[in-house]
Amino acid sequence: MKHHSRLSASLLYLLAFAAVLVMTSGVFAQRTRVKTTESIPTQGNEVRQAAESVAVQIKNVSKFVFVLGGVARGIEDIDKEIKAGRASRDLINQNQEFKNDVLSSVRALRAGLVKLEVDFRAKPALKKYLPPLQGITDQSARVEDFAYAGQLTAAGRELLMIVEKLADTLVEMP
Image (cartoon, rainbow, N blue to C red):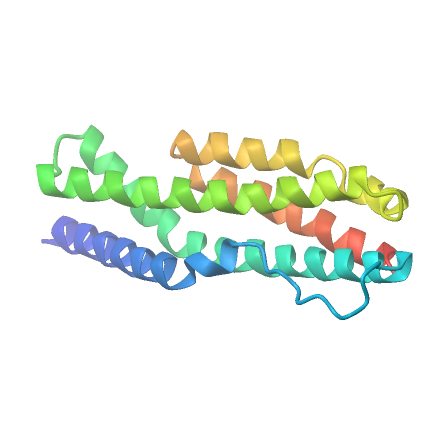
């Protein structure tokens, strides 16, 4: 009985995670800013918009880590049950769907982080703020690799390091 209730609790976490992913899928998309009547952005506006983009990514990654933390153990527990041969075909299929949802969300999150680093590399006004941000593209690739391998706790730790870099970048900006 105890084993069955733990598996049921894990499944409940996964269902809650899927619901949260569906509700917050727009969170991981890049926010766009409505342009003012000013046609040519000044260097100060470009830096301010970049700072806002960094803040959006901090929020996106933080929310994702929070959601991921609640279900990582559930997915990993079900994986153990699968390896031990104690999981039904339905549970195996459902667990795979949850993993696919996580991977899809990680890819969307990664796209925003890659775009941010590319912007900082490409725009002259932002290059001086690149050093603390540098490397988040590679880190986000490691997050995706960890998620693909089912190592969600390691993915979460890597995401926390990305949040640190984003925060350090924001501190450097005016």
